[in-house]
Image (cartoon, rainbow, N blue to C red; front, side, top):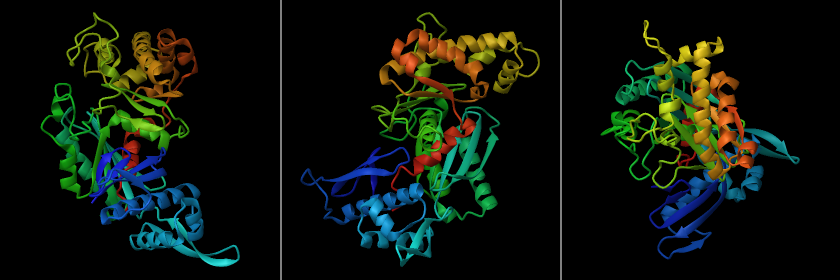
Length: 427
């Protein structure tokens, strides 16, 4: 049985199998460390090690079929560096599981079997558990969406309601698409809080009290009967941008999510970066003023107190009729409302100021802005860029692109589906 040891290593009883993955979770390099001797080698001697290596080989074959399309077994062996016997064994196993289909073809004058991925043979599921909404999607191994559905939650900050809603939405989607439940290989889940790398629970309970004493991974695994993988929603937004989005070539990327909370997902050196415990990217609680209003984290002057949609609503709501919503902010901004545009201007400059420290630290090629205000495009981006240029090291600010996400409000749920494929669920 495999147990995740790190983002890119899987420990067996007798060995640690280490892998270097690209943005889509495909294997670039792998090596085996014998934990009994501390040595490294290319041959696995223990049964557990064989299981781990087979999982990696399956991922390598699937990665090749995803990028190159249908291939003969000889072509798969050539692309993956595996022996033809190994490829043949893997293809037979995947054929039995409905992951691939085969058809006769002629290659180099010889008859051969063409192997192609079966779109719905294995289905990763993405879940975005927001504070006020739940979104669920079904995807393919080739990073195509099969279907999605979302609902608004009746009560903000009630994660148990969101978990129950996600289970119901998944059942509806499977029925609607005729995808068998047995095809679901795993569920990725994004939540609005940092995940403790050690326990899988939400860090900083006082900031997210609604998640205290709740293990969403365990709750969903018990309800669905498949592996569940958790991450912060901004981290999944970053992962989506380099898998589903147009930024697959970016080695250093920041996904900035602006909403009722503010967070960053980081791609550093081509890989998602979580930090020591999993709290990297909490830019919303970076102080931009020593004398600003008191934040729920206990500090003063945090970015969230200046630029979150909750703060914007507090500033703009006139107390007449129902309380304003984020949709109202968008509508008023697009209509040219002076007060709304000024609030967005101030929030954008404050965001750019906080972002400057991130840009100075990791020097990304691009900052991708997501969240419900991203539809405002340059109305939001222009003040962010002004703040960034004012406070960042000149060359860093000038060479960092700032763009809105092309994935819209789907970024987090698509990243959640991609998260499944980064784990050893395909062996």
